[in-house]
Length: 265
Image 1 (tube, rainbow, N blue to C red):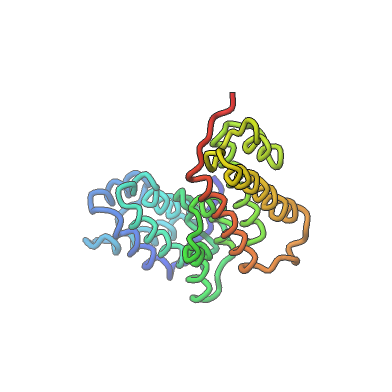
Image 2: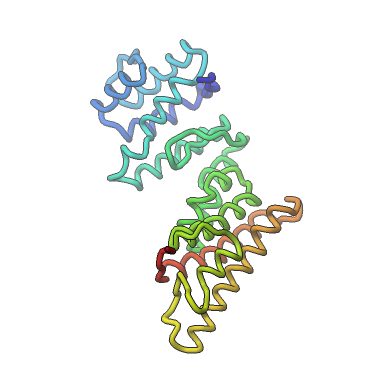
């Protein structure tokens, strides 16, 4: 394993305080043992034990490998299934500190490298992220699932591209069709043998809505996936464009939430 960069010593206390809230004393003993961390703290308070022991281990290692392994062990998602809110709250708080070291704890509990923050306001804004602001627009969770990392890095150009992929993958998951783009949409929303129904297709109004939704999907793909693949980033307007596109893609996802589908033979 390559050497993990050193964590900034001044950040250890903040990290330790968050981690200490997520484990019992017994669990901490087990995690220290599993990750080869020697408790050199002579303390009883969990966060102090973590703070002193992790700092000592990094100084001995001269790299952050074992510290990173311990943090990821505590933040393994499987340990927090019963209290996801506490997990996400802790992850957000940790990221507000870790981002100064150019690190992010992703949703899977693993570290990702990101551009380091330089100010407290920047760290808070990026750790809370555009994802937090988008919740005011009631953005569909599938959107955030596909592009959380790009949002964290403020890479809105590629965030929108990844979000558009989420719609295509949703259609494939619903139907089992191994297609993409217009061919996928045409097959899913065929007028004679559709794979997906957003309504009963009994009246002319319902049939028009069905066709219109297919055209809306094609338009979204043409507007988002093709330009983002070929145009320079400088033509993008950052957060404003991204928020508008996310709103459009969320509407498409919500329509699919209530749709009926059959799997392709």
